[in-house]
Structure formats: C-alpha cells, structure tokens
Amino acid sequence: MTTSTLPRSGDFMRLFARTPMTGAALRIANTLAGYISYDGVFRGAPKGFAAFTMKELQAMTDLSDRTIRAALDELSHLFGLTIQRRHHARHLFAFTKIYDPHQDVPEAEDSVASEQAVIPAKTRVTGTPVPPSLYRRTNRNNDTLSTIQISEGAGSVYQTPFATVIETAKKGTEAESMDTQFLWTGFHMLNTRNSHAYAPLSWLIAFVRKAKPKFQTAEKPHRKPEAPAPACTDPVILMARPAPYANKDFHEQDLRRAIGNDAYDGRVSEIRKTYGASQFAAKLAVHGQAVKDGTIRP
Image 1 (cartoon, rainbow, N blue to C red):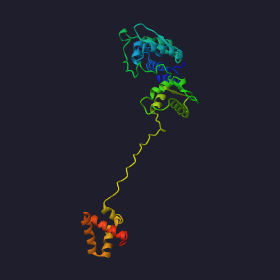
Image 2 (image 1 turned 30 degrees about the vertical axis):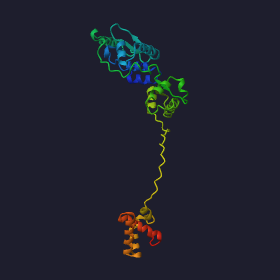
Image 3 (image 1 turned 180 degrees about the vertical axis):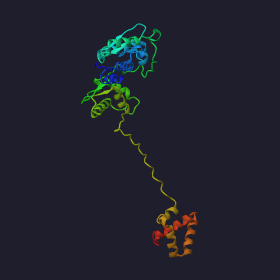
Image 4 (image 1 turned 180 degrees about the horizontal axis):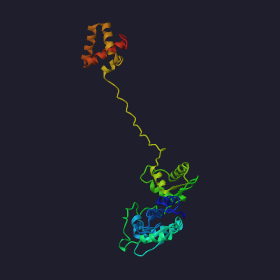
C-alpha cells in the first residue's frame, strides 16, 4: 500500500484480525497500530512510525520480554515490521509491507517532520500515559492462533490448538458438561451459515461461554406413593354417606313431610343420645338412613 494517505489504525486492525497469528503477536500489533504518529510529533515519532521502549510494551501488554520479542519476530515476517533501536529513547516501529512512510512524504516535508519530532532527552521515554493492561502473563492463549479459518467441514478439534481453548472456556459455565467436539462443530456451522470465511478467537470463546445444553432435561423427582387413607370407623359418618351433603335442606323437608315433625325430631334425638353426636351430624345421619331405607330420594 503506497497511497498518499497513511492508513488509520482501524485499517491496520481489520487487516490484523483477518491474518492468522498468535494471540501475543495480535496484541502487540494492535498496540503499535494504535500509537502510530500521523503528524510527526506524536510520542516523538516521525509520521508513519510508532514509538515505544521495550519496558513500555511490557507494561502495556503485560507480556514477558521473551514473549514480546517472539511476537515482534513473527510480525516482522507477516507485515515487514522494522525496528529502529535508539539508545535511551523510544524505538521506532513501522509496518513496511503495509505502508512505507518514506514513499508518500516529500523529502523537504519529511525533514521538517523529523525536526519537529526531536524532543528533549528528559521526555523521550515519558509523554502519553500508558493505559492499564487488560491481560495477564498467565494467559494461555498467547501462543494460540488468533484467527480461525472456517471451512465446510469442521474436522477433529483435537488436531487443532483450539481444543484446549474450548475446554478452558467452558469451565464453570452451562456448557461444562457438553462435548468439546460438539461445540467445535456447532461453532463452524454457525459461522458457515453466516457466510464468515474466518472468525476471531474471541468469537469461539464467547460462543462456548454462551452455549446451553438445550437437549438435556433435568430428571423429575420421583413421587413417593401416597399412603392409603385410613378407613372411616365413625358410625354417624357412615350412616350419613347415602345422602349427599349438598341436598341436606331438601332431605329435611322431604323427610318431615314423610314421617312428620315429631318423628323426625325423635330420630335426631335418638342418634344424639346413642352416639353423642352434634345436632347437625345427627340430622345428616337421619337423612342417610332415610335414603337407605327408601323413605326419601338422594
């Protein structure tokens, strides 16, 4: 790319997201792209360069010195990353395969920008505050490819470096009991359906953490067999059963007409004396006996 306009950091990052590389290399590449100088004075770097010391890169990414050097070597092969080392000052980084900062700036303008970029030695390694890192050195994805190629067939996940990523991501989630190969195949099917030729590693981690075992249902607790109700032994209740309780008022009227008021009251009094029942229970018992004898209807 040799256009007269320097690509913005978003253009760099979109290219990085589409290029298979390790997680550590992607982190370093995004950091450098976010701090490229566009005016020749940002952080003491000429136009098209990013300025960092190794200590600053370690502080911003929270990666070890060894991991950073391996990531820089990987980026030099992928994007032609060049490093101009400067003693006691920020080193200059440029992605020469993406953009050559020396080809689109006239020599006179370039010399002016270089003169503007000169800053006192006291402030060469200070300036823009370093933001806090969102990562830790113990992150196991540093050496894992940051981009997943989506094909029609997912293949075996255990032949890729992503099996460990899936097993780590699903711990403590609803997908913990789900098969790793099943999750891998489902991730490929989703991206194939959405016409994605590639997918960032973060998509896979998010997919695993949100996956839910829809086809697994919890077993219903077994009901304990209910104990049979004890048999009723109360004679008053047994005598009242033939006459439905809801018709008690009709039963009383019908029975008084059939046998007379005195005979009705006499039967109720006899039940109360014999069984010690209440007035109401005794009436129901009298009604039940009358239905049983056929004196009145139920």
